[in-house]
Length: 491
Figure: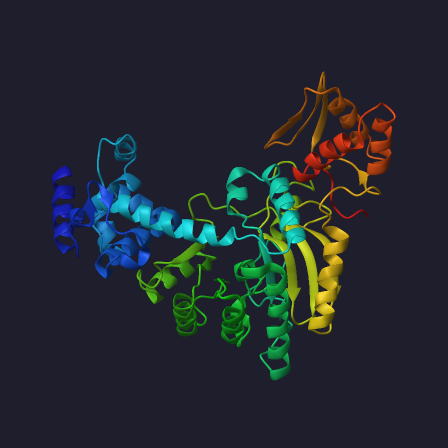
């Protein structure tokens, strides 16, 4: 039996399109010779695309993983991989992986492809970290980032980008995923690129660029919608690029419905500073068809989001319709489920059909915020001037730079308060904050924990004890900046 398996592997190996890849010509003194992505030649990019395709198959399909473990060469040929199994052995061979991680074994193609994709991620993240121009929006967003860092599991927190703006170009979504994290309603209306709508769209982008600066280019044109539901989506994207300087990322659950159109969108994205694009993969069958329809090279810079049940580490966020299904199974008990969200905007959510704007930020889905984001404010607008006034009002009402005298101060409801000998601590299942080494902290913690005192009252309390109001203000605003004070709209 062993001899038969050996013969089979030798036979299949002879059919492989590529021998193990010789990458030494691309290295000098053990370092990759390219300094920018544009410098990489097509031969190398083609190999990177094959490594990526192998990783996609490995993560998506348990049967493929089993086939590779038993007959790697046969599995590679069967799935059309133009790659030798030895090039990526650390991924499918656990014993080899541990030696590779220790530096005992070298796999230069895998190392170099990892560097390439890490560089892509770095460029993307660097762009997404651009801060809004408006100092009030900037500091409000920073407080939201500080808040979520103590609420989300590290892996979730890592992928929440806190984009400053997003635009829905439809009302509803035609896909209807049973696990939709934002409970998208059915598609009922489309914001077509009519002369009137195009004019309004460009004016809206100009208004938001005025508030956000280059950070407006971090926005995107979907939410509880699929971008390809709008037949004029590309026209809106071209305007977006013309005004913000960036082509918006596209995430779609319908890559097979309009493959030629999608190729055109990907081409536009490459030509106009597009940062990234993503396909949501809803089933293994869909995944196989995507791999058939699109070449590995076409998908080189396209992220596949694995939402099929067979995927390795598949996880649906506990939000929206998935939360409803989870609670039904657990008879309404929220605790057993990993909290989550698919929301990634700390800023302004537009629906162009309704001419509406919401000021939102991600949170763990709960009874009050079942869609996984807090709605701090909302309103509608008629035209660009009306929108500008609305955004200014939202900033004025929701984005103070310091705690206000009339604010009732309380800790976030998800934080556990504990008094310490010389202060207090606040904790979640993710993070613990300690405020100590000063008697003022201990008294301050007690007053805020009571949850019924204003900034003015707390300041006066300490003034009566001989504490300067500037010192009290410093301590209160430190808590404010750390994101531990409750900022949710009061019911």
